[in-house]
Image (cartoon, rainbow, N blue to C red; front, side, top):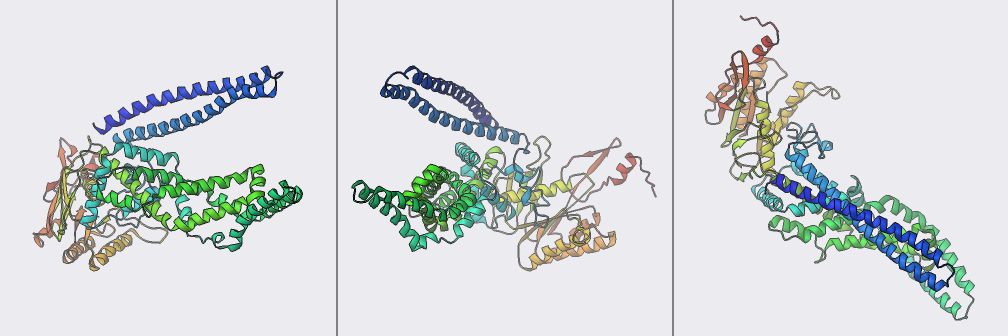
Length: 600
């Protein structure tokens, strides 16, 4: 079944089930009203009878009423599940039509100084991240962004990631359940950091001898005094007096308990969401060894962290009982309840806190893999790259940009067979050079994070991707465009001098200087690239750079994008051709717009 059919079928079923649930909730609400009215009517009707008869009559309506409340809550949760499910399916259908505006664009990860993400439009509106991101947790979103900003560099790691993504791409139901579970109970953006901060704080109550004595002394004293009072050994007023003293003493703990609840209480309860996500991951029979290894990391002496996280949630729920004033007096006076619960919570932290960061990071990895699995499922025509250890190789057939609609996407081949090796791309304005460079870069990046690329076939060697396509002035740093570009080029040279393998993509070298300097500088730069055994692609309007093939006949190839003029109109095929561009269109376009161009 094609992705669009699967999403449409599931959306139709979801809408039908949601309609049924809404009707059921309406019927239950009506029944609850009738039972409530019936309960009051029963009391009125039986008021003249004895108390036993009234109680029996009330129970006949009140008990079903309470049962209906519980049933109503269950159906309401089912409604929420179906609504989130329907929303996810609708968004995926939009995504299949190249409308990614409904997804988080990760603009907070944008970095103009990054090696390639800013140039390739990786983050922000209409970005690659927005097209891929389906994460349901904040830590999953951060993990996915980190994977994209720091792509893999070894054949083994990429192939392991590929296998994980392939496995997940076949598990539509799991990915959907995982996403719904995470989104229904999604925490605040800062919660993950705060939770990890709490786990690192030192526990003091569990190490306090007096605190541990108190939680046993208080109930013991109460029991002794109560028994003695009931046995008329002492007056019951002693029990009441000591009980009241314990309640007063408990005020000394209120501030600390309140701080725990206000600062971490709600955040820590979001761990129940992670527990559900962990349970989902552990209940699946995985094929990919990489995912098996990830899930194994979750175990502690054969015990699931989901049980530990649920135990913490229960302890926090019990601490909430202190918010009820009547229960507060009873619980504090009888057992010093707040102190007892805080010690239990700190004891949990002492035992499991050191694992907490690892659990969150593992859930984040699974969440990020689910995003890439959905990306692979949504694009069945995309191909996973063959990875080679031999430097360098970029051999792709029918490459297209993944963000471009299929009907508009003109596909081209790319071949860089060895090291060192450069492609020089010349061509007219608007002919497709820049789009081609971004297509090369984005698909290479997809391959290096283990995802499928928009191509018919691809074989690559993983080297560090670095680009210079969109250098800009920096007014705040009093930095010119030209100097900013020089800094970028120096960074590339420094990395090469340090022995790093690079795949370099440059658009119009040294744009901020005059033609003579530009040609001289460009020639020197490319010669240095060759000496340092670099690989890459350079797009330029400077046709003289095509002459470099004479000096490096086995390491440089010239390709171009032409603008054809037919019947006094410009036509762009956007297909790459061998050789140096012959037609430039600037003067032609200026004439078309009424700007006088003098022919010498």
